[in-house]
Picture 1 (cartoon, rainbow, N blue to C red):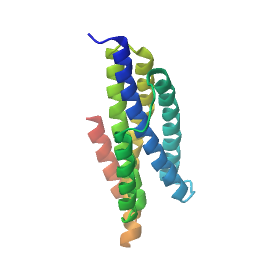
Picture 2: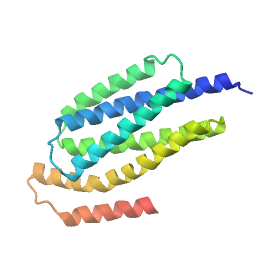
Picture 3: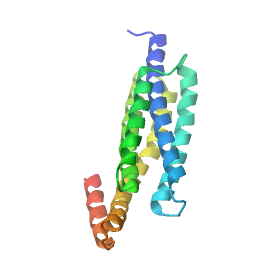
Picture 4: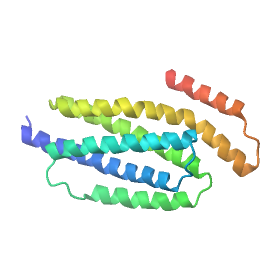
Length: 188
């Protein structure tokens, strides 16, 4: 049987991993906003809300880290995350369709974040840390709808950038068809 100190140390590890992920994700989204055209498009508005969500979640995770984690320093995992993020950033600069890529990357990262919160909620309930479980649940309440929003935004963004880059006419019927297909898949 594990002692409370060991459980708290392991919880601290879970929280510091989540903090590293959130910190990186928030900085990527902040960079996207800095480089984006400041127009009230659905993609820009969603990215603004995503940044607010990440900033709020990072603040909550930081507070939990102060309660349960000791001496949080840069770990090899954080260094690897930063390296991979820099490599991904370089790769992204080499690609066309930057908004499509940003939405896709945010969609992927949010899904990973939802999985992390699910694992944290489960772990914290197993060790009797209701406060962390509640924090994880509240994060999931915000993250899951944002994942759905990005899944519905993706077809429009891809269609607009494809039309622009390929010299095609934007076709709302294609967007509606794909959006409805995605909604059906998520609801089944």
